[in-house]
Length: 288
Image (cartoon, rainbow, N blue to C red):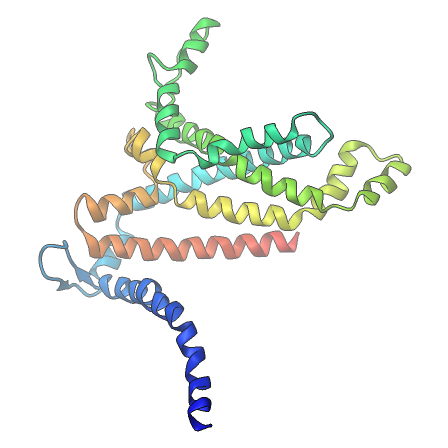
């Protein structure tokens, strides 16, 4: 009897031990080690050197890092509204009784599952200044060529457009799910009152899918803050650091210059910034 009671007490811990081990190895230890690393200078090869708060002092004097944050915010300001508008517009169309709805949904979702590297290289060819398809189309109608990736004022918007094309399929599916949860009798009652399509959209559809919009905004924000592959492949952060994102800059500090302690400090600061932005977004959307 005593052995059975002991076994019953130990058995739950045995079942949860894989999760606890995973948490300790892949969550708790990396976080603790990252915080520890921010107080050290380390290039992976040489032993660590304690540097106190030098990494934090350097962070607040690093103009390029704050420029990279500004570039990331510019990307978000363009990318998030564009993605929501396009995704919601297409989802609204696909939610109607049209032929081949399944095909259209699959077609819009296809870029999401394609490798980001492949999509980025494809759009890099489209954006080519001399031989790119977009500039050839502009020339064919008598318009001048555009420096999509070589003009500092155009490079980040160009990347934002490409990222929207790549990811919009996922948010179309999310909005479709949200639209299909709206009770049809709301629309029927609005029609009896003589409401127009736009009135139904703004006074019924948008309020009812507000949780979906909130989720899309949060996912888009987190995805936008992790911008890396697109500028890394298409521009390398140029021209004139106009497309260097915060994640790309952190990567370069860590794996180009081997400033691991400083890169970790930047990453920790950036993670706190993302958390702050998400909290503010949540308060703002819930308030509305």
